[in-house]
Length: 623
Image 1 (cartoon, rainbow, N blue to C red):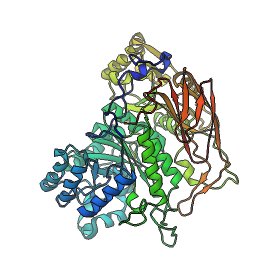
Image 2: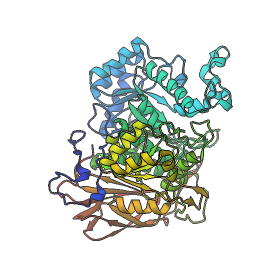
Image 3: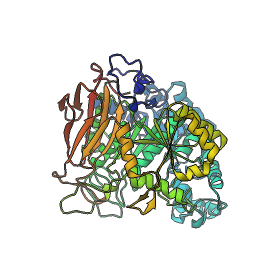
Image 4: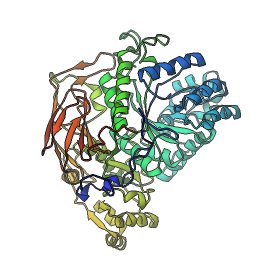
């Protein structure tokens, strides 16, 4: 399939200027959002295999199988970033697929001051890929979790340091109450400075090649600011807050003009998905029915693609997708599903995520939902709690879920939630320039904000560009009357009414009713009916909406998934624009032009409805 060059969706299409044959739409759907950025040197989205053989002959076999069966087009991780990998890298340079390398002395990759350092010979091996114009990076995995949690875990240090433990532990161990810091910080700036120093050491010792992978933290904006080549996420595993992490990563990628990626981990409690039958005899359950459900994997792979990632990595896939790691490389049910998902991605134009709302936090906000403390260590202020409630209790949470017969325990249900207003927003910090913020119709400030002269100038720039600013009364008090008057002179400023969330009993950043009205005003498709997760993108043909039924599949880590066929989500879609035809990508169902359409989504499945505004472009493949 011949793909169009990256960036073929022209800037300005969401403003609908100069788009031949496209019907005019209300200005309320205006946004000049940047299309998803691909990995440097790549012309299509990357779906990678996790792990690769350590000899060239077998690596050639795997690449041939991946090509023949459409199983992916990259490796994450591929070979280690060491000189000994040079023969593998020389071959992969001819393949042209992106490769994320495991760091030198990889077990110590998260340890500042360790032996995980790129040598001159290692760097020379990696430059084979550079010379071929093929993207290569080195993973820094779960660095936020290491910094805050593992620095005080003696068991982890014994495993990492091995024979060096007694001689070196005093240099690395931090008391649990320090949460990784030394000395213990008392201000946000001190937290920021220590984490920045930690990250920059890793970036420098890996030759500036870092792909950041955060899991139990929300430090995506800082990874982008501090020089990561890709803003990466780990989801699945035992990691919460999936949807807000997507909003943080996409916002950071747009603010810093970077690609972003998602790695879906198969660990779930004391279980992990592997090939073979379910085995619960040991402390860690294994097998295809261990870990997460195939349903959740498919939902996460496709949602990450649709949300704008440059790369999706099914973790541990080399040990899951094949019955055996040798010829004839027979695919498991998970491998067959992955090949179908990748083909689905290649067959459809995902377009650009339409997020008309940008939530802006202070540069030093240090949002850390998992740790329940700001920067992982400082007690939350009321403003910090307001941020948490906005993301995890309003935007990416629904109090109602579809009932499953018998109401069984379902720990997997917490990974993805129905969204009352859809995946409506990106998240940025007060380092974002006005030229970036003005691309969003609405800017919502949340939490404690410091209004420097620079930041006020950038806000005014965004307001003059047509954005609307929503302020909490606390922000107005902080601003002062003169600064507020200058912002109002630049454009539309709305001071929100104080509202206490009846569910949390706490003051909120914005009321549920105001959020509902924003979605009604800004989103081109209304969604009513059963609670579902949804996101809207703009592509060359028109608008596409992803609808996910996250209920009806019950899964615990050490037992097989149970599907309840009756748990069907029934929704009504009401387009707020003129459309000529519509089709659902999964079932191929077609809909005649009309005011609304009804759709049923089976348990644990996704549906994608494309509304065609510009006929003749509906079959364009996705970049």
